[in-house]
Image (tube, rainbow, N blue to C red):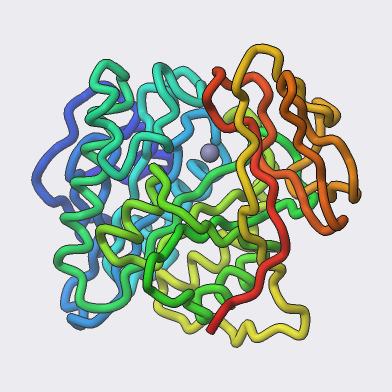
Length: 334
Ligand SMILES: [Zn+2]
């Protein structure tokens, strides 16, 4: 089997049906396309308790840098430049949107997990989200060691914390401090602790596969080939160490990772909705005490205390949907 650079991404993007049978890589590893854009690689003779690592990218089709990072890692695994000491499933998410360089075609795929795809059967993303759920569930079902899922994204806008993670709502499970340390070794600068279920891929694997799962926002999205991949060195090196089975350095840093939690959602109720922030406002921008964040007819959203920040502001959403999240500093309970 041919394993030239960019082979995997090209094959994922080609319209051909993926081969179903396992094939050897130059490195001696065995790879298998489980479904289009779904590549599993495992070393022979792996100890039963080794990690199972799921890397997903392209859930938003125009977020190209993480796709390039994952593809480069796969090619280095294929050539033997990078050793593999865990089970790996790499998922190229929204293939149709990736081919067109679009975020999505019919419906934001990262709002279709956790079974939500069944409520939007006409969206082209629905069947793909269901398939990704099945692939993730199958992969983690046979996991005996740690179950790890990193869903790699880039944000639409700039951010006061350029790289940040979203930790899905855990219900009764405790937050994993070792994982927070690992995120810090990836140069993640802040973590949002979600406080309710969501229809994201990382919530699905966290909830239904009991994985330590995170959505990682790694900077601003740019077209293919225009990414400064040096900006992604932190995540790239940390993922390579993880896959090679090298222990991450003790990340108990003197500077603790800033944690935030969602305080409330700003909901756009009508076309009268006005976001009172600059159109280019960055994620995690501080909201001065008393600042009018948004108004919607009679309803006014006003910042309190001076430590709140705005996340994912988007006044262009349809009425009834979330136009932003107001977050505040948080601490772990335990
Ligand atoms: Zn994204």
